[in-house]
Image (tube, rainbow, N blue to C red; front, side, top):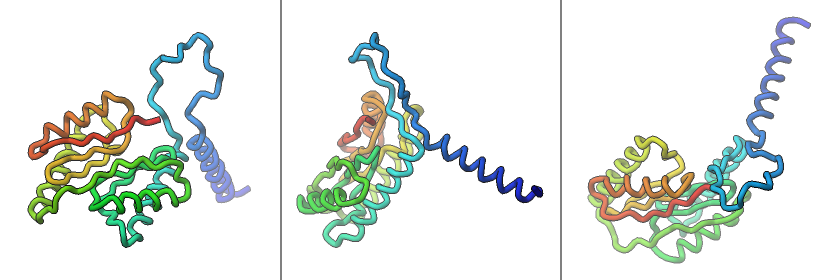
Amino acid sequence: MNIQNKLVVMTITLIGALSIAGCGKTEDKGPKPATAPESAAAPAAKTTVGTDIDDTTITTKVKSALLADADVKSFDIKVETRKGEVQLSGFVDNQSQIDRAITITRGVEGVKKVDNKMSLKTTDTTVGEKIDDGIITTKVKAELIAEPGLNSTDISTVTRDGVVQLSGFADNQAQIDRAAEIARGVEGVKSVVNELSIKK
């Protein structure tokens, strides 16, 4: 076997080994000890590389489906997915947009459940207010990124009239509370709507 063939075989073997290792379950399949109390605090929920890829694909499909629908202004809707559960958040004009967005999302392949965290817009905003809201959103995101112990990539932030809505997923209630506390401390924030959920 020449050197080129050996390299091809080694590359294929390495890719196969990495694929198996990356997609393996991270949870313990062994039986639970009988002495462990049911009320014991559960560790943070883990996902596999394959589950993360599936969730990203579902998020992309949902965003595309919302963009393609003329009745839903999907730019104002944030989409987060965890283990097939899709969380919709943000601000929309009316209840029919909420209902339509939920219907569209349920129709996307791979979606197991839809969690509606969308809110209705209360007033029209000026261009200046939209710019201010964008600045506030940017500041909140920067503060969340800077906070050790928070996985800010799982937290969506949107602002409307100075009201910041946090949505997405956190490991525990302490992280949810800390994210809200950080958002409240940002200049220009009038109030915080905390729609974060604990990872399952």
